[in-house]
Image (cartoon, rainbow, N blue to C red; front, side, top):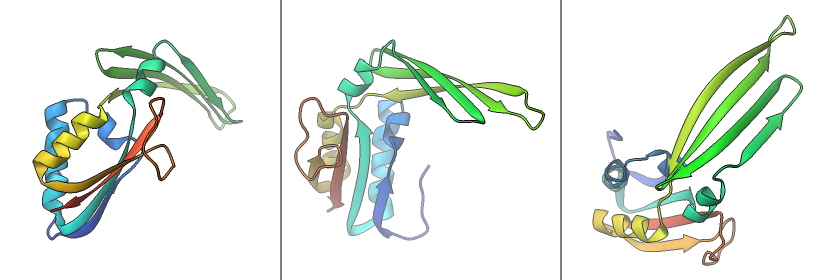
Length: 151
């Protein structure tokens, strides 16, 4: 739904945001809308989890806790979708714990898919970097960063 009143020179999409667009056609449309929002020569930078990372998370259980919060989640990976089932516990003022639940889903997009969609939208000078490194990603990379320029 991105629609800006005037063009911008830079768009940054961080923290797996494109992964959360689980329908490939919607992801393509998001990329097209970023292209429209950028001025010619504008730069688009984003990161995604790799399919290898999301696939490896299948069946894993994770835990994070502080004095006032406790979060446990498990993951399932099926046909390109990674689903996180999260249980969140927060300490109330009276010392009791309040429980809530969330479900998160991420689509595993390949670098090849994303770069093809970027080119189709009109982006050029597409560059792919490894996780927090200014180099090409390795085969076992957990996250990749992509930058491109509106032609």
